[in-house]
Length: 385
Image (tube, rainbow, N blue to C red; front, side, top):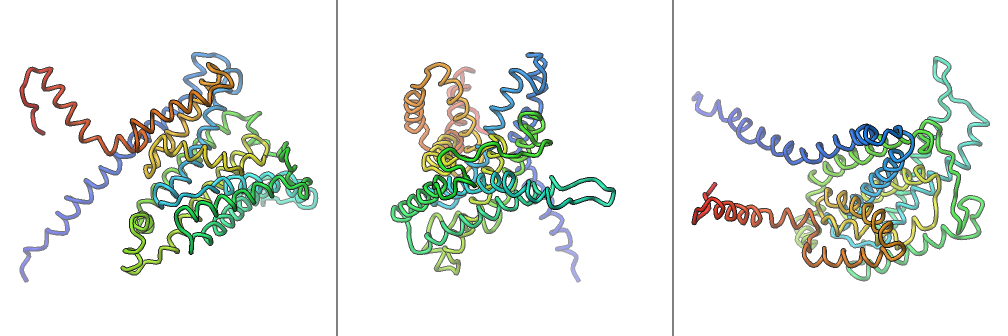
C-alpha cells in the first residue's frame, strides 16, 4: 500500500480550516472590541463624572445605552426578515408588542396570584418563587411571539410582494386595535397601556440600573452571536438563496414556504424577547409598541446601517438613539424634520446603508487609498500587493 496520500488530510486541515477560523475571529474582532468598550463604559464614565454608577449623569447614559441594546436586537430581528429573507413585513412590531404585553401581563396579573397561593423552595429552603414567575413570564413571551410569527408566516404561503406587505399591514393594524380594545382594559389598560409592571427587585431598572445595563448588554451580544450562527448555518444559506430565486430553490428540491416560516419564527422570537426586555425596562407595555410606526422606525434603523449585515442594524439603532437624543436637544420638536433630511442624504450617498456600502465598495476604497498614498510618496504607480 502506497503512503503517498497519508499526509493529505493533515495538509487539508492545516491549510484550510485554520485560516477559516482565523478569518472568522478577525471578522468578529471589531464587535468584540466594541463589546469590551461597552463593558468598561459605566466605570470609565463614572471616573470623569464622579456621580456614582447608579446615580446622576452616569445613570442617565446607562439608560440611553440600555434602550440602544434592546432596539439593536429588535433591528437585527427585522434584518433576518428583510435583509436575509427578502421579506418586507409591515407587521414586525406585532411580535415586539406581543412579547412586551405577554411579559407585562404575566408579571403584573398572574405573578402575584401565583405567589400568594404557592411557594417554590430549593432543597436548602431558599424561596425561588420570584425566579420561577420570571422564567414562566419569559416563556410566555416566547410562546406569544412564536404564535404571532406563525400567523404572519401563514399569510406568506400564497401571497408575495406588495400583496403580502399589505396583508401584513392589515394584520398588524388588527393587533394594534386589539391592544387598545376597551374589552381588555383590565388586562392591557386599553389606550393608556399597562403601567407599573412588577419587575423583580433584582432586575428593577430603577434600583439596579447598572445590573440591568449589563443584562441588556449580554442580551444584545448573545442575540448577535445566535443570529450570526443562524445566518451562517445551512438553513440560513437556504433562506438567503430563497431570497434570490424562489423558483430555482423549488426546482432543486427546497420548499420556499418552509424557509419563509423559519425566517418568520426566528425573527418573531427575537423581536418578542426584545419586547419583553423593553417592557421591563420601561415597566410598562403600551399600544405604541404594536403600531406600524414602530415597524417603520426599525426599518429605518436597518436601512441606515445596511440590510443583510447584522452589524448594520446595530449601528442603525445607535445612530437612531444618537439622533433622537441630540437632535431633540438642539432642534426641539422639529428634530424629525432634520433627521429626515439626514436620512435622505444617507440613502442618496450610501444606498446600501453605512455598513453595506462599506462592504460593497471596500476594494474600491482600498485601491483609491493606495493610489493616494502613492501620489504622496511621489510614485507614478501605486505598489501592488
